[in-house]
Length: 173
Image 1 (tube, rainbow, N blue to C red):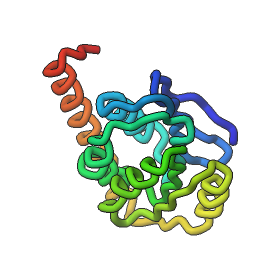
Image 2: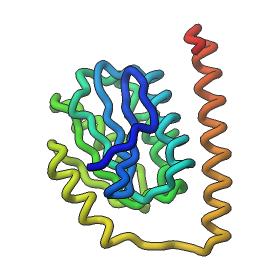
Image 3: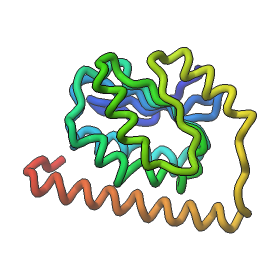
């Protein structure tokens, strides 16, 4: 991998892999819902700058996850990845057995995206690298532009929602 750091937060690093043309999110630590929301917003903003069809998600260094995270991911965040043009997700779940269940729960409702779960980064990397030969180009330039406009709108909406929740919780950032 040839990684360009796009975003750093205490719970996640977001990189663009210039060699493989995908985003790589490297999560770590104890993940609260607000940390996941902030990290997902940062990742969504990276998709606006680096539109790619593939994402590698690593939870190898995650020590705990709040139980409300999978439901939020499933309902609020992951369905928008298809709109961003994502066609392949390689997700490395964390070391605890519960983390695989959380990943499965979050990804279950995502449609139209090839998703594979892995217990190690090497296998996920290999699978995602092979996926470059199976990418499907959908739609015209005008439909791509309208998807980008809609994605921009949804990222702004997610950002506003997150700020609202942070204000309610007294977590002004």
